[in-house]
Amino acid sequence: MALPERITRAVSTTSFRVAAITVAAYLAFAGLVVGVLLWQTNRVLTSQVLTTLDGEAQQLRAEAQSGGTAALVRAVETRSTSGAPGLYYLGDAEGRKLAGNLSRLPPEIASNPSGGVFRYSPDIVSAKEQLAVAIPVNVGSGLQLIVGRDVEEQRRFASEMGTVYFLALGFLTLGGLVAGMAISRVALRRIETINAAARSIMAGDMARRIVVSGSGDEYDAMATNLNAMLERIDALMSGLREVSDNIAHDLKTPLTRLRNSAEAALRETGETAYREGLEHTIEKADELIKTFNSLLLVARLEAGALEGNAETFDVGRVVCDVAELYEPVAEERGMDFKVDVDTGLWVTGNRQLIVQAVVNLIENAIKYSGKAEARDDAEIAIDLRDHDKNVEIIVADNGPGIAAEDRERVLKRFVRLEKSRTEPGTGLGLSLVQAVARLHGGAVRLEDNCPGLRVVLTLPKHADDR
Image 1 (spheres, rainbow, N blue to C red):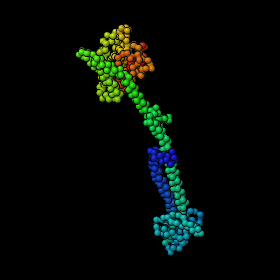
Image 2 (image 1 turned 120 degrees about the vertical axis):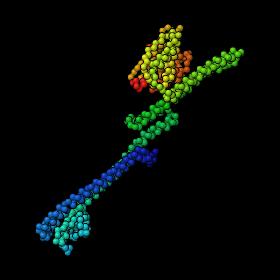
Image 3 (image 1 turned 180 degrees about the horizontal axis):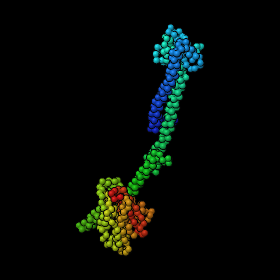
Image 4 (image 1 turned 120 degrees about the horizontal axis):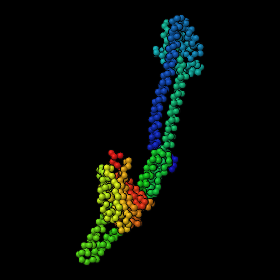
């Protein structure tokens, strides 16, 4: 990128605009302060000069009153030749000069009874004029007396002070603009890094992430949040691909069986055969509809579509009711069914969804704990634990369990381990439980029951019970 283009881009950034506005506001304030300082400096210097002149005027007036005109002339001559910085002019009523180091009565002072500023030439040869301040002094007898001071040095000092102030403002302006340019360049580089990563991701590189510099500034915070968002999007897309693959794989068999049932019914003759074939077809179609309904429910739960249907209820009572419903099923299969649940623990959420989650956990435990004819020590334990802010619903069995490396995977939709392929099911049970937990701000974890599997469903307690 050419240098003019880089400068143009840097100047057009928000960082540069903010820096420029800040510098402009600072300069306006600094200019006001400088103006006040210059005015105050000039006022103080003028006040000092006037105070000195008033003091000398009083002294010369006292000389005139005590010694007359001759004493006043001597006093003015003495002050004029002593090398002091004072300026004096004493003239008579006809305008003749009697004493002083000024060659003439300044017309600016003669026409102004309160005194003022005038210019005079201290060197007759060069005729270079300097600035002075003088006041008239009333000494009576028709005499004209003015007392003044050369203020050229003060004027030069004030001018130099103003020059220094304005040069400082100029350097501050230049420094502020350069600093703004540098800041905007740094910000532009960081933003360009983010834009480059975004363009790469839009081009299809979903593994690309935004670089975090480690400085902990707002750009790092934004990059961290964007990376987390990209991870979530990547996980959702991976889940979508996996669900699509699983749907194609797991629903192909029941659809094939459905078609085979219909073909077999067509090959048979007689009303009874047709009826049995249709009933069998409807049964398999109901299983497919149930699978799609479960899949739709999981999708709605993960999208948070059912958050509005919330109520506060006793979760212990709900678990007891579900356990009481499945206890005969477990006993029929020869299983030891243990329930250790206390009531009085309240949660806020969708009662039907939490009931469905508990049902799924108990059905899985019954399904995979083994049949009565295969083993006589199968058992299922249901427990409810009260923690500080959460309630844990625990369903444990002593079946084959799930290997540690597969526990995270089985919580996904349509995932079924090879050893469970022979059992009826869709692979949506645990994914629905996890979706219900996430919807309520809880979690699901799978643990080793030694032997068997221990599933812990965590739900946040009602606010008043925490």
